[in-house]
Image (cartoon, rainbow, N blue to C red):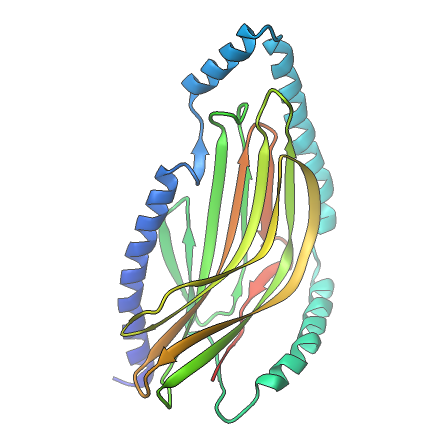
Length: 297
């Protein structure tokens, strides 16, 4: 068995373990109501009756809710085209990002530093509870959106999480503490909309996180960084997110035995109440997320 075959065989064994854990975690989160659409007609009817018993004109409120939801859909359709980036814009931003990061690259250069390309990446999605492997690729195109329903006070919660893990592998030359330095490039946009009123419970949120973990004999533990957080009950924002985020992960490794490092980024969106909406888009046009290499030393 050559080194390439050895890496692939070991990776597949690790993937079995990771995929099983991922599915169990997603199942727990979904059952807890954090992901997926949770809408109970009985609870919604109960809340509607409470509003009616308090003397409110519920039919008029529901009509206003419908108008607000329609206005939100129209607003999303209007603002989205300006957020989509063309190929020329993507090329310019990519060149600027590489130039900006050049000084960081030089500071990491040295005899003890290794530059690793990913073996491939895996994708996990909360709606399918599956973990798919894409070999020899550094670029990920993905999006996630959530649209709330109902009054939002009891039910009507919607959420989705999509994650990618880039896998890097190497054999340490010495037994020591290593510092793994990742850089993740983001080119995309976000839309977050919610119009909360005194009689409902509207809310929307969009988060982007980076996580890192390492494996040699066992998993060493996750470190997490939030790189984008946009949320509110009364919010109406739509902006591009073009950025490079650098993270450092210290880990103690033993010489000669193969080690694995995972760099993960997750798109997490949540919305509750009709007309509430959250979207993270790194897929349309030239939008993308990249993790081309990892420094270890």
